[in-house]
Image (cartoon, rainbow, N blue to C red; front, side, top):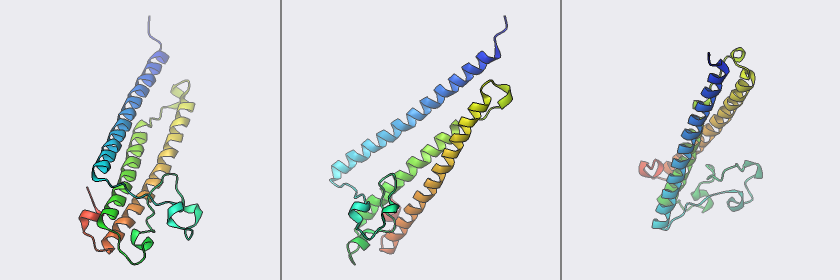
Length: 176
């Protein structure tokens, strides 16, 4: 008796989904491990990074600039908030490291989602049209994440430029 092609297709789809889920879970575990190490390092040094948002920047900033994730604002440098006094190297380093973490996390999300996109020949499979529609939605999500990634990279670049203009070297504006 010859096995049915639909069984092979179903097995292939299930196996690929299991693989994708396993690889995605691993990247989330890596991210959690990095965050735990970061918190432990902050606990050892006794410093916690300052997160700037609309509540603590002041009423001069408009309320529509808030983002979904609390990140430091590139236009509100610590020097501007404290008047003519320059921000310390530690403040710049903490802000830049935090922004780099945001950029790295977004990059990992984009890469994982891009690797999971697989189109099929719609006429060859029973649910090929629906499957491709789901893949198209993934592609749209990738494009949104890529735009957000570009914005976050721009914020990082502006922060690094602000630290450079405050007179700090690359050990401050480009920490590991």
